[in-house]
Image 1 (cartoon, helix red, strand yellow):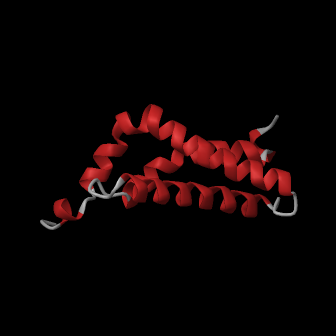
Image 2 (cartoon, rainbow, N blue to C red):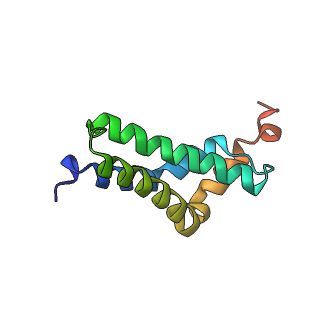
Length: 102
């Protein structure tokens, strides 16, 4: 398997990195449901863009697998790593009450 030509691998990799981008949008005072919805929509969008960029939209199985991998990787990596490696701090740093002094 060559990652440069494997759409699913790109979806998995980009999904694992998505929580960092999502943490710029997320706010600590939002409800868990809203935060989950934002995270899911963002990671699904990353999966869809990956499929479109790779030109695999005509292959339904590849497209659905890539989107699912992006969503699952995003949630798994956030819960297992990024939450403790600074994504939570980034959320707090970009909160409106913190930005008001800028």
